[in-house]
Image (cartoon, rainbow, N blue to C red; front, side, top):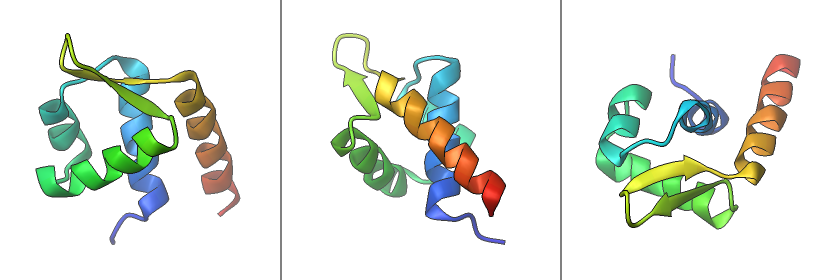
Length: 79
């Protein structure tokens, strides 16, 4: 069964909630390819949910991202 867009976004947000990650770690943990993960990360950056630290080259979750993950979990529970 294919995952929905919301499930993939939530998987990325949950992964980053645990700790900051390199893009490679996100790709392997969420089980997507690099081309696909770029689209999801771009969506999350535009929404202000994740950000990239150029110095450490790591992706991290913002406060808005934590709130978005909570909301996605609520929606998922309803469905």
